Length: 461
Image (cartoon, rainbow, N blue to C red; front, side, top):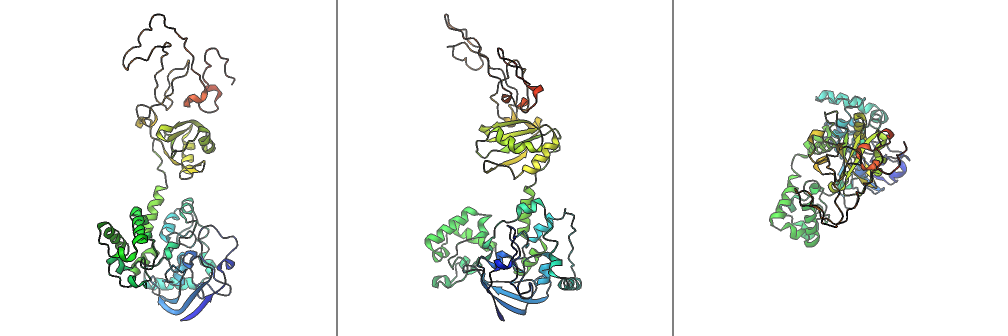
């Protein structure tokens, strides 16, 4: 093996206009990528700009193609494990992935997720050969081409969904030491001496394997390790600790070589998990063309109609905005279906009001709404003076009778009692009527303004 020290800061070798998401690490000046320096991402190299690599010419066999290639081995940081390249540079360039973690170099996502989300683009995805002879010829052609020609297409193709799912910061937990299988079984002898280099015997109490499936159990396990130490937790035979160890053991099952091939071809479990999240990011458009209402979850925020109108008016004319604080939601109704579809597409997972991200979904059909109003929630709005009862998407509301002064209201189901002799009768006070009190008249339509209340001048159009 030959010792090669990359002593120059990698930041100086990279392009000045580097994107926010993780990209390929540029080779130091004077070294060729793939031959003198590995094709790896910034996450695999770690946060330290000064690292020492071991170059081993013709040392390993590619896990995907079986080609012999020059491998590299390094340690990304003090708390990280030693990492090494597992596929040849030609195989990595053919799909634009890292030689070490096999993640996409541009978006820092599993390559299967990138390929699945780019199928609808104009660029055609090249099909990789399956037989051994065809693979050899294909990767020989890739080796003859320049790096710029092979990798030119991956930086140009993108979709909105792919940009939303891409990581904006490095995920260095990918470089953590491997789990100690003997500690999981309760048989690690080096944890007592403090010489075991694996988790959690080495003092690294982080478990990304449990972060998605059992976050509460992960926090409890970390608390036990920080309080009692890895030796005592290893010998703990409690039911809860044993269950957490079984989950950690289950995450390590499978053949390592087969997992590498599955990751490269996009059929691994991590890819399926990301694709499931991608499906949840898309709203299903209802078949009923009469639905022009969007549901907005307020997330416990005090938001006014103006706040929502400022964010929603750009996609079309708004017919009404109904805010229901007791149900912690709002309904935005557009005048046309095209405006509602455009707003749903642009605002889903993107609606930010007062620094809070709000949830946007399609509203239900009119026949599926509750009998008491929108979403089955009664509306406290009474009809305006001189106006008949209107539905307007807000439910039928009965008029409020005016009671004489000093007379208590009658019990439910009974007519009001006559006033006692000598009781003072107050003249009915007309209720204030404004266009904003009725969602059916929301907007800037002068021809739809209600008539003025008695005793007031007409509203200027």
